[in-house]
Each structure stands twice: as C-alpha cells, then as structure tokens.
Amino acid sequence: MIVMERLPKRRRARGSRLIEALIVITVMLGIAVILAPKETGDRMNANEMAVIRELQTINTMQVEYKSKFQRFATTLAELGADGADLIPSALASGDKDGYAFTLAVTPSGYTINANPKVYNSTGRRTFFSDQTMICRQNWSPEPANASSPEIK
Image (cartoon, rainbow, N blue to C red):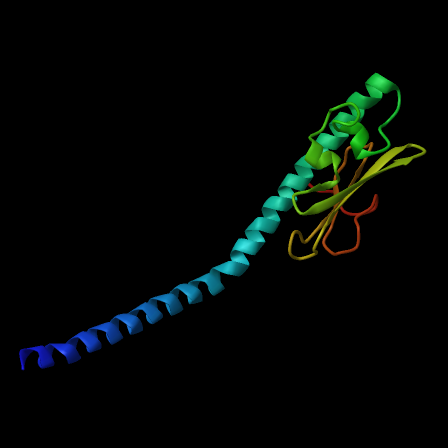
C-alpha cells in the first residue's frame, strides 16, 4: 500500500514541475519581447555612430591619398589594401556596420554616401560627406546629400 500512495505524489510533482517550467519560459519570452525593440534601437545607434567615424576616416585618408598621389582616390578599394592600404579591408569593400558605402569622384573632389543595407533595421539615417569633411544626415531612406542637415 505504501508504494501506491507514493505514485500519485510523484506524478503530481512531475506535473507541477512542468507547469513551473512553462511559467518561467513564458515570463522569459515576455521579457524578451519587451526588451527586443530597445536592443534593436541600441544596435542601430551603435551602427550609426560607427558609420560617422568611418566617414571621418575616409575623409582623413582621402587627404593623405591626395598628398601622396596629387588626386583623390576614385574608389574605396583604392584607399584599401588593393591600393594605398589606408583604410581597413572591410571598409574598402564598401560594406561595414550594416551600411553600404559609396565613393564617387566629382569635378571639385569626391562624395561619400553611407546608406543602411536594411532601412530601420541596420540604421535609421543615411549619411553624406565630401571633401569639405562635413558629415550630413537624412532621417529617411532617401540618401543624404550636400544640402542635408549637418551632424553637430
């Protein structure tokens, strides 16, 4: 008889442990859902800060490149390991920090655009800079340009 009395208690204990585990998982999922948007916003902000630093790096290296070769580099690869080896290869590829970087030569110098690869996921802003070394931003998917607001 003693064995019979213990069996239902074990089954109850197993069942209550399962319910407790399900409650813990539900609470953890609820917390994750609440924190996910903040984490995404923090990651986008970190990407954007890194992109601003990368634009400043490109500007500085363009000045150095011009002092060596009497002209601005026409591509990011020219500034990278395939050329003057002034910028990291990841940046020279044009794909860094969730952004696509483009360098173009103009009659008066150059322009750099940095646009999020996935708008509102890898970044909320587009960026622009040129030989003036002023970084500009646009708070929309439309690429920033020379008339976009300056980053202060």
